[in-house]
Image (cartoon, rainbow, N blue to C red; front, side, top):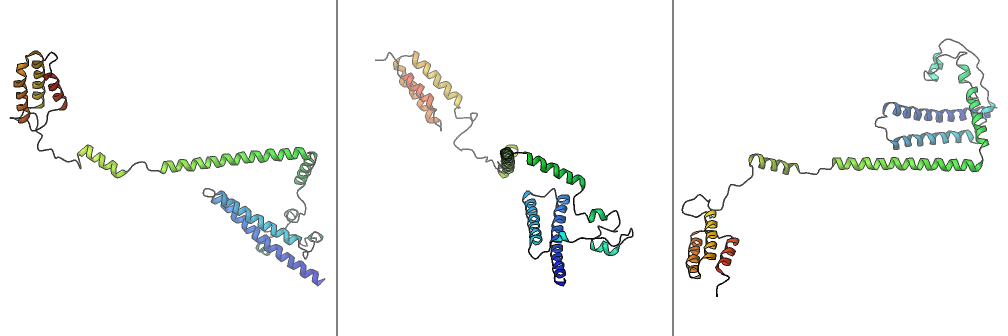
Length: 268
């Protein structure tokens, strides 16, 4: 008898230890759901579920161990029921059960579910037994397909959101270049005031402007087309003198016109 009592105490201590670990894990997980839901990630939730699942498996292994006695053969009978506050009971239950009265005993010492829950379980069991193996397999395949499609859509939305965030955060311009361009356009910052020394404006005295040269060239062409061949040399010598007096070069178009004017179509 003493050996059985010691074995029962050891089994109860192991169960209490496993139940305490499971309770702490549940408490921390509930705290995360209630207070850290805004920054809670799915991998963290999966880790919490994995921890709870492992602790439940360990608790089941303790219950199924060969040295663990059958607790179903042990009966708990309340010896004293009192509506008064029990400090020892408060300490053992961590403040959850202040009194051990007729109101709380049916709930805490219940070995079976509530009658309503038990009736629902029986109904579900009966409905499941009516479904054939083929129908159940089809329903399982349909459910798996729906879950796969849902996971694919969720993954696609996550990838699109991540790519959209990268596109929004990517910088497409250089702020320094933009500021330099605005300063140059608005205030002329960084622009050079250097001009070539050989080029002069059209209003300087002593040097013919571009308009005068163009006018002279056009007049030369008209004279050459209407005049005799004997006057070509004097006209060309005058144009050459004008070119010698100008520091720049004549535009290429004007030279072409002069050459074409010098070749009379009826000249022999």
